[in-house]
Image (cartoon, helix red, strand yellow):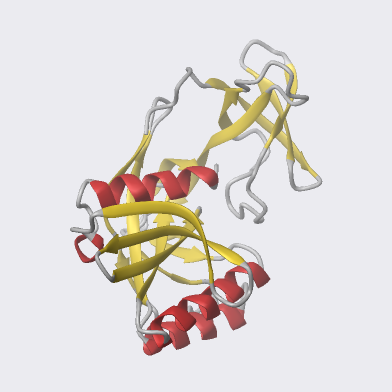
Length: 246
């Protein structure tokens, strides 16, 4: 997925009321950008961190910028300190997973004839991110954007998520009804080696994730390549459902 217009570089100043990011562009201009990421973005918003913003396509939009990428200091699986670019635009996760499915990068979700998005499902009034169909065979696919990685292990969520817990129950309903269902953790950063639940942040989500897996929901991980020009699906990331130990 290429960014349609060049991103503009700056530095993070502060976050306000979840959806507002204060930043200073490299030309010295202070701006307020929108972020659609309702999580904590734990580990991604250090004071002075380098970031990249996209200009608003609609000139009438109140906020002229959107937060796309943050550069973070991380520690890899070998314990080395590294600089990592992290995609924090949660809307892109669905597009990246759809690209990966279409390209055959996720073998268990390959070979379907039709891919549709935002289809209503379940008993709780939700819309599934992706529905794959071939004849009478269906796979209901939920996507979760993951930006929290520590020592190579990606974890979701980065803040308690009632909505995420609801989605796990809805996916189980689809399996009970005789369809397939899958949850794809889309890791928008290149240092994710494994992915699993952040039990220390939302223990109930971790419990429901393992319950869903035991009920037949397929838990999958997708890794990406991130730079200031594009974010691209790249590889399968191993899922580790063992309880997280702090």
